[in-house]
Image 1 (cartoon, chains in turn orange, green, brown):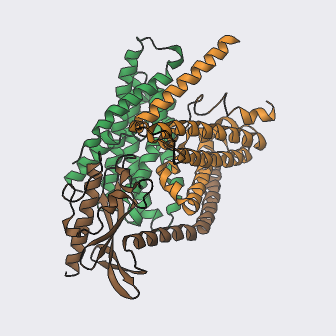
Image 2 (cartoon, helix red, strand yellow):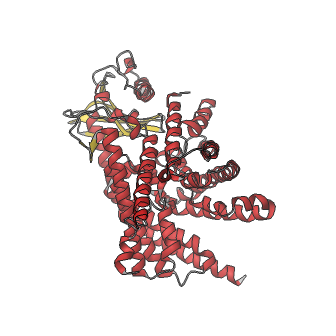
Image 3 (cartoon, one colour):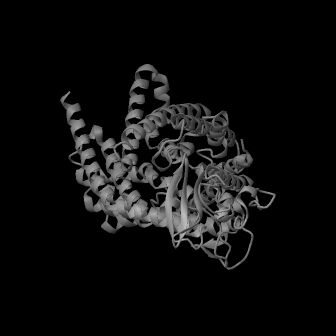
Length: 199
Length: 202
Length: 180
């Protein structure tokens, strides 16, 4: 695949959230505001890129039977680095995201890419793949967060939207997240079915 | 731990803050394994066993090792390793002693390692019951209880969803909503229903 | 057997490297993290005891509190309180003057339902501090009670009650301990 292809595929065609259904737990939990969504997306991307690079570097050294625990240790290290940095430099965001920061360690996107890609391909490709997946994850998060924040709180990035209305609270709560992602995936399926039909 | 606290944790973890429908922990298997009741129940019981035992082990490690040596920052690393090895251990034991169950669960058993609910509850236990470096009285019991409740709540959601999806097979779902999207929408209705538990106080 | 040893060794080496890296990052970030906690704590203390400039940490049995001083003179006390709310524990700081009248309440940490219980820290646009907590100021700590002189947050009676009861009981305990 062309080099740029590795980067771009994570954005739409193989989007981790909408296409591959990976990393749903943090996506739904954290998408209550665009700031949270962006923060989680960037943190997860950092972990993705760092761990994919590292896994790719040691892929020939690690015996196959112990590869999963080794990958887990590498990922956990990057997650802890993010945890500590956020606590030190962005304490409010760290508090907002709560347990979902350490939960990046079991984010299916991270382990999934390490296992399916980085353990088999070169470092440069792995980094691009990770970056693309991370950005895809981030923009999906932002879209969902934007919908929920506007509909459920009447604000975006914390600023009031301008039109005053009484926001349906459940959008910010759990049901709203599930509804939003259900409708979005349905919409995307519909769009791609139409595209397939045209070909 | 008082009786009041006991009930509060159990009801809270199973219903009010249901791990799947409220905290969104354990969604991957929820979407993936909830098509039929049999596997859903087996998965739920396996997860419950792991969450309860992992809560016990990780609490003890945190209390006796991490805090004592000021290594709290190794929490994420050590907890996930404990879970990974424990699931591996369960896998091996189950293969020898309960081969049919092992076959039914298949790859999903290993996937319990990356189940957000398992790792999530161990971290939640520490955040809730070990505030500011000192464990609460009866903290170990509370942690194990919350682990048990997390698993039971997970199983409950799984079984409920599988019951609905089995019936959904006979319904006419628009093509673009088939399978995953309609499951999410149903889950959102279930979650809305569970929100009703929010008024409970013990 | 040799294979097992090799596996263990690889895993062990990776764990060792990981631990060393994390220890290093921890050392670098520790001072900043502690600094953040200190700044936040001091800001909260100053907010609940307006006018005070120094605080002295004290403990009386299991009550953790601060004595607030303005220019060397004792003006009141700040209580560190923890109450079991809806989503977990609510950590707060309450300031009272020497007669037990509340001078301010601040929530430090909570996990209450977003949009409902979390409204207790909500600041209305155009205002400066959370309206729910402002109700406490000027009232005698022994007298505060939801429905009597504190308005609960709509749809979050439990969170409101938990905070109110915690402040009242905590202040009562402290005042008794100090013999007032």
